[in-house]
Length: 449
Image 1 (spheres, rainbow, N blue to C red):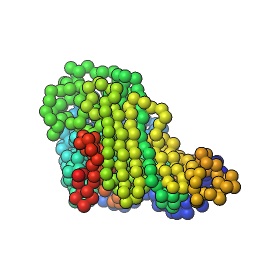
Image 2: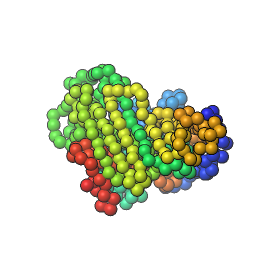
Image 3: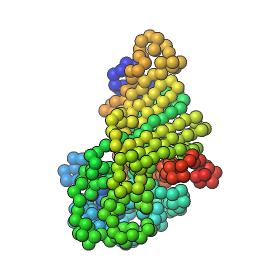
Image 4: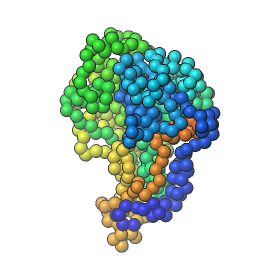
C-alpha cells in the first residue's frame, strides 16, 4: 500500500474484521426501546454550568442555528442547577426551554420527577457524592472526567451505579473517534506487532497571567470579575461541600483545578484524557505499577498542583510501558498518542480528544514487512498507511452514545467499569507523586500499595 490515504474499501480489506467492528459501533445510533419508548422525551437536568458545563448543555439542548451543536433529538433540558447565580442564568439561557426550572441545591433537582438523566460538571470533590445520590435517585448519569479522587470513592460510585442499574457515561469524548476504534482493530489484528511502548503527553504554553486553569467562566476568559459581586452571587458553603472550610477565595472558586482539595491537577484532567484513549485502544485495564515526578517549574501563581507532570506506567502481563509527559510551559512539538510495536509504529495526529487520523511507520528491522521494504514499497521513516476518516462511517458522538444507551439500556462506551479503570490509573500517578516512590496496584484487593 502506498503513502496515499487509505480508502474505506482498502482499509477494510486490510483489517479484515474492520467492517463488522465499525458497523457494530455505528449501529449504536439510534437505539430503540428501553424504560422510555423512542417517542418519549428524556428530561435532562444539568448540575454545574461553569466552563465545561456550559458546553455540555449546548450539546444536549443545541445552539442557535445548530451549526456547531445540533442538540440531542428526543431530549429536553427541564432543570438546571448551580450555586453561582451567573452560571445558573447561563444554564437558563442555553437550555432552549422557557419553562426550565432552576435549583441551587442539587438534591432538589434529583427529587424533580421530570428529570430522567443528569449531566454533572462540577469540581471533582463533588463527583462521588453526586454520582451516588443520582444513582440512588434513579437518574442516569453523564459526568465529566476525572471520575473521582480516591479509590475508595471510585469503589462506592461503581457499586451505586451497578446496584441501581444506572446508565453512566464518563466524559471522555475521544471515545467517539473513529480513528481510535480503527486503531484498536488494527493493533488487535497484529498490524504493528506486540506493543511494548506507548507515548502520550500534553503540552500547553500560555502567556503568564493567562495560564491553564486560570480562566474566569470560559476557556479564554481572563477578565477578573468583581470579587465583591462574586461573593454576593455564590453560595460558598454549598460550593465547598465536604472540602475543608475556609473563607471565600477567588482563586479556589475559579481555579479549583489548581488545588488538591478539589481535584487532582494534571492527573484528573489532561492525563486522564490521554490514558483513557490508550485504554480504549488497547484495553489493558489498570496498570500494574506507576512512578511519577512533578513540580511547579514556572507557574508560581498560588497553585498547589504541579505544572510539570511525568508519569510511567507498566503493564507487566502485556510487556508494555505507557508514558505521559506534561508541561504547561512548553507547547511544541506536541506529543500525540503513539503506539510502538515490534513491527511498526502507529502515530496519531493530535491529543486524545482531537485525534482524527493516524500514520503507520514500519520498523526498518521488521520481519513482517521485510519483503515490502526490500521491494521499495515501504520506506523506513515514511508512513506506509494513513487512515482517512472521510471515507469511514462516523461513530455517534459521546453525548449521543449516552442518550442512545439511556433508551436501549446497553452499556455506554465509558461506563462505570471503564470509569473505575480511569480513576484508578490517574490516582496511581497522584499517589506515586505524593509518596515519592513507585506504587503498585493490588488487583485482588483493588488497592494501591
